[in-house]
Image (tube, rainbow, N blue to C red):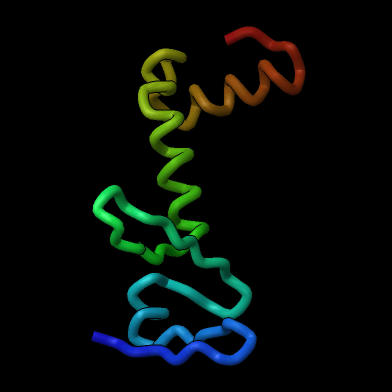
Length: 85
């Protein structure tokens, strides 16, 4: 368990152990969200955005028939140069 004090300006210092666990560094943003049970969760905003993007793209590779780096390069070439796969 870690404890942090709120300053008069509403600022807190995230304990070093928590920063390490969340992979936070200077300048990073943290996300606060409330679960249905009322619990407040703190998360690394960058990591949360990556997880959201991964979920959004889940299955996209299979739908496009992409299974290798060569397939990805072919898609890039198609978009850049209009070359078919």
